Length: 612
Image (cartoon, rainbow, N blue to C red; front, side, top):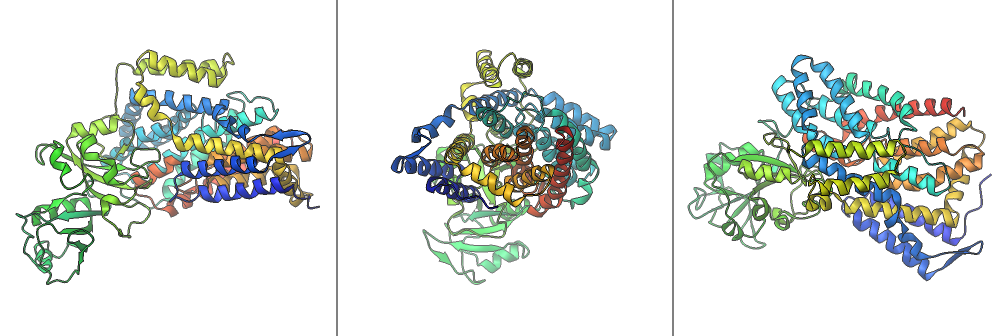
C-alpha cells in the first residue's frame, strides 16, 4: 500500500533535497557554492513559511546547528592532525620500506602496498596517503617496466576499502555514527564494525591485487619521460624570434611538419586566419597543442617564448625567475579539489610570483580535445587539470612541501623533519584514547591539534590550510536537510515508500537494496551528502520493519563508502586519474565489479551477524 505523502513542508524539503543532489553533481558549480545556496534556500524558506508539528516549532536557526555538530568538529580536527603527519614526513619511512620490497618480490610487494595503505586509511585521511604513494609507485613502474595502470588504481581503491574499518576512517563514517547517535541509537565505538570490513575488505583487496591489474589496459603515466599527455600552450613571437616575419608554412617546414597551430592571436580579441601564407609578426601568439617535449622543442626551433600570460605580460619582469639554464626542471602540477588552483584561472593563481615557477601549458583532463574560447591564462581550472611548469628544483620542492598541490615530477623527496616521531606519537595517542573509550573522538582529536601546535609539529598556516570549505559546507547543508526531512516527516515518508515497494521481501533483501542505492548514489554525488541523507531514512525503514536499526545504519555507512566506479566519486580517484593517465571507463571497468563484490559480501555478513 502506497503511503500518503507528507504535508507541504515535507514535500518542499524532499524536492529541495532532490534539487540539491542534482546540483552537487554539477562540476561547473563549486561544491561550496551549491551547499551554501541550498542552505540559504532552506533557512529562508522556513523563515517565510514557519513550520509547526505536534506543538513543536522548527526554527530556521536550528539548521545552523551543523556548524557545531560533534562529527564536524571531529572531522576538521582529524584533517588537521593528518596534515601534521603529511608536513613532517612522518609516513616517509613506510614508503621507503615498501619501495625496497619491490626490488626483491614485486608481486608480494604489491599486496603489501595494498594492505598497508588500507590499514593506514583506517586511521588517517587517505588523501595524504595517496599523495605519498603515487610518485613512489610510478617511479617503481618506470624502473621495473611494470605497467603503472595495474598499480595506482588498485592502491587508491584499497585506501577507500580501508577507510571503512573504523569510525574515524572517513568523514562519512563519523557523520553516520554521529547522526545515528543524535537520533537516539546506541553510539558505535571505533572498532564495532571493523570485523565485517576485515572479512569483506580482504576479498576486495585480493581482487585489486590478483584481478584488477589484468582488467586495466596499459596506461602511460604523466611522469614518464616520454609522456604522451597533450597540453594547450601559447608560443609568443618576440622581436628576435626566427618566426618573426616568416610565414606559417615556413614554421611548419622548420618543425618538419609537426607544428599544429589552433589559432593565431594578434592583439586583444583579434585572430588571424591560419593560412599557410600568413606572415607572423612580433607580438603574435600561437595557440598550439602537443606534448611537453615537443612544445619545448618548438620553443627552441622558432626562438619563441613558451608561456601562458598568467600574471600579465610585464609581470614576469617584476618577478625574479631563475635563468632558463642551470638545472631547471619540468614538472606537472595536478589541480585537486581544495587546492589554491581549484576554480581559479592561471592568471589569478600567480604561480610566477608565489612559487617562482613559470607555467608553460595546460592539459584539460576531462576535455582533452577541446580548445579555449578565451586566452589560456583566463581559463578556470578544474579538478584533474594538469599544469606544465618550469623552474628550479628548490621552487618545485617549496610547492610540494606546501602540501597544497600534487606535483608529478617524481624528483622531489617527501618532506621529513625531526618532528616526525613527535607527530606519530600524538596521532597514536589520539587514536588510543578514542579506541579505549577514555575520550570521545571529537575531544581527543581536538586535543591532538593542540599538541601538534604546542610541540611545533604543525604551523598555524598548515592547520588552517588543512580545513576544506567544500567539506565543511556540504556536511552542514546535508545535516540541515536531514534535520528538515526528519522533522517534517519526509524521511518517514521515503521509508514507508521504500518498505511498500519492497513489501513481502525478506528483511535481508530490503537491507541489501538500501545499500545498493547508497552505493549508486555515492558515485554521483558527495559521499557525505549521501550518508547524511540516507542515515535518518535507514532508521525510519528499520522502525517500519520493527527490527534493530544498527544493520541498516551500517548498510548506509558501507554503501556510501563504495566510491569506486567513477573518478568523480571521491577526491583521491581524481588524483589517481591524473597521475595514472586513466580514462573514465577504466574506473567503471574495475569499480563496478569491486562494488558488486563488496555489496554482496556486506549483505551476507550483515545478514548472518544480525540474523536477518
